[in-house]
Amino acid sequence: MNKLLLFVTLALMCFGIVVIYSVTSQLAASKNLPTEYYLKAHLFKVIGAVVALGVFCKIDYALWKVLSRFIFGFGAILTLAAIISGGAVKGASRWIWGIQPSEIMKFGFICWVCAKLSNAGDEIKSFKCTIAQPGVPLAISAILLLAQPNYSMLIMFCTILLVILLVAGSNYKYVGLSVLASIPVGILAMLFKSHTRKRILAFFSPDGAMSASQWQGHHAVEALGNGGLFGMGIGMGEQKLGYLPEAHKDVIYAVIGEEFGFVRIFVVLLAFAILFSQGFNIARSSTTRFGRYMAVALTTSLFLNFAIHVCVCVGLIPTTGQPLPFLSYGGTNLIFSAAFIGILLNISRSTTGKSIREPYISNTVSFDASSFKGFRTRRRFI
Image (cartoon, rainbow, N blue to C red; front, side, top):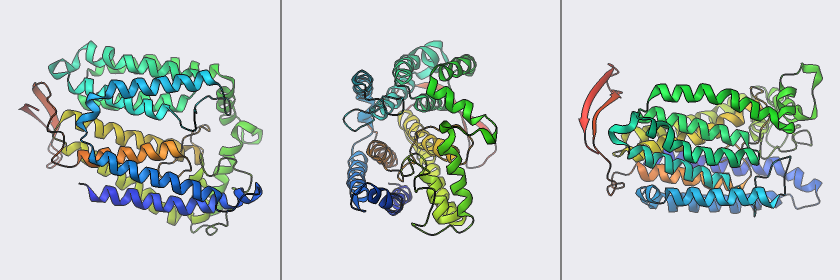
């Protein structure tokens, strides 16, 4: 088992506990709650995440290939229930019973697409395997996510699918045409919703025309500037005192930068870099195509959560609600992020995935990473 990945994940969770208490203690006091109120709630979620990591680490990843459609269907039904039940928060209906079902749907989507592509065999470059089969779960997901709306999650779905298709060796012509056709459709869809349109227009407006839609993004950048090299000190951040309304969730990276500074936050970035590199190393060493595709997809999902969150905080993209894995306050994303790590750890074990049977591929082209001398063609049966 990849012990370095496990260590980095647990270290990030422990650091997240410290950050959550620093960010939320004064928030709790302002609501006449005990200063440890949010800390205790987060600790229960961390315990649940550690349990999920351990359980998913023990389950042979071959099971997810069998249950892929069921998991996706269950997540889709819950997402639909969240939309029907109403209860919109900031213009989006994303939660039901305290959970975000789109995370379940995302996991099922990954399992379904990876299962289909791993069974494609020599037909991997056909229109059926490149467009038709992956297009079914993507279309269902797109309809539900647009109805919420949750555009950042839909972008993640599309990007994950694109990465898996490229790794699987699908027909690049079909993939490229699909991407070119989807970009204008996606832009029009985002501009259709009023609250999304306001955020985009506020992002591109002149600096002096800051609106409520860009308030959080503006103060996130200001928080990072306040931190400087060594930070203002733990618990001493100012922007979390009412200037960042979702400081413990959507912009926690900015609070970390303000209190710990660039030097210390660089260590956090390094930890995430190690986590992602180990995920892709696990994919490269997997003995099955399904395990390889799953490892790439799960690592890409974690990376996109990280990248979108950080880009919002540094002002590179409009404000959107994506948590920082293992550090942000919130149960669903934390538990599923830990579960993804558990699956990656299971894939890294040499004794798992042996029950998977995949069709013969006559010729596969892969990069020889050990010698960096280029490409080589080989025949194999997996």
